[in-house]
Image (cartoon, rainbow, N blue to C red; front, side, top):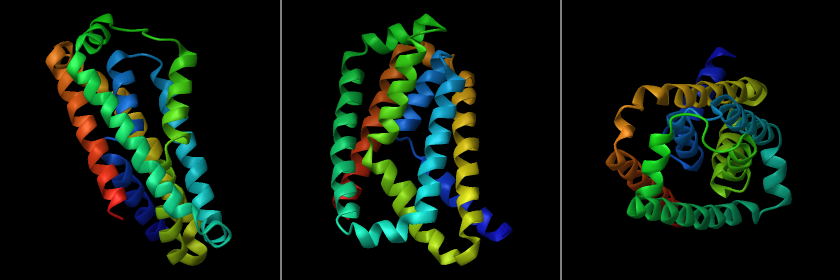
Length: 202
């Protein structure tokens, strides 16, 4: 059980470690110190639901809907290309990022933050590829211990998002400079397009 849980934790952590759409949003909210707890809880609980679905039902889903995996792959690539373009646009404009960095706390409404977080999670096919497809596929190798594998992956999501959301505050002095925000947007855009290219390449 411990071995399966550890494997699930390390796999789950490695999948969400790279800056993705969710992570970029959580990082921004943490830097703003705006609605951090609801945002990290929304991300972690959403991941937990998707991981549980993958661990418990992926084999059945793949058999009933053989087209689902390629559809998610191409849909995820399209989503990431658009999100990457948005990040590059934000880096080019720069002014909006500077305004966000200078406002301190309390930017944006709680409703807008949670809805954005839900959209970046549930409307992003790439999230399904990582949680339902990949984790679900590997979990089948652990037989009856796949539940512990899934529990480890879920724990990784909670640890990661809480660390990212609240740890971002330590980076606040760096992101007081507008160039740092623009640099972050460029990195986000590059990572989004790199992941999209990987998905398209299969």
